Length: 418
Image: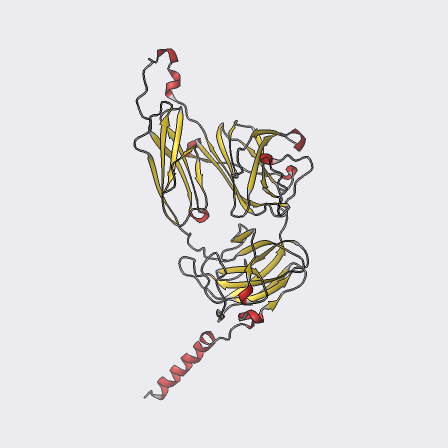
């Protein structure tokens, strides 16, 4: 039996734990009790998911990461047809956001987002979903904790929910092209541009060309001066945006001269650039005839520039080289690796000991394919990867020992501090 003093201490301890251990679930824990947020944008709503649960019939609904089963619900009816962003960027824990249509848990359908995840303008722990809302449609919003961050983080806390009209990009017009600069790497033999952006609510100007031959309709512009001469790979990466590119010289829309003609709508253009030359680069969304609009979404704009290195053989007069069959295999060297685990991408610059010829690249179990430096891969899965590249000279001799780069893609550590 407890002594009276010990019993008092035990009771006091239980009372101190009671508020946290037996906190009441928030009113909007159940889907049927979701909080109505209807009204004009912007909308801001503070809330909590402390002690919230997952009710019967509530499913993950294709969250990007694993939900913590501490979900709360909100409901919002769109007054206008427009692009909107639902976010929890000001929340004090790692959140997940899902947006759906449907009047019951069993009938919910996930809204197809133009962006889902953490955008470049959202603080640590926050999530954003950008989508095209239709006037008169009611959208159900679920906020939950995120079990995925490493190390394990809090899954309950204060929620700062916001619904806003998605702004048009600042570089929508040619005259407002975003100036981008190159980061010099490898002693000036390799340069990189890496900037975030989006083309939601972007338009196409009168007199603007059809980039890559596509009608488009939601273009944004970049302005880049080549720091050196060489081959540049211009890339637009997005999970939702089907991008087309145009690379030009000229100071106005009426004076543009294309310097590259893309052969496919891959969101990538390879072009020879000249040091000191200013280039205007357009990123547009591929036009969808069925939807009657151009593709829109968040994007990352990249340029990889490889500067050719002098070949000592060019100093030897051609006439002095005896005409013999080439039986020597080239040597392959990886000169630069740019691995971005948090963005799930990797790029490699490489060279051959011989100037003429080609390269063959292979990533993991993918098929061997012809490639050119720099070779970039996007949307890589978490885990270990192996990249191999083999030079083949003009005579068909292949390097018997390809250059190999091993790397890993893993979710970066959770940032602390808010």
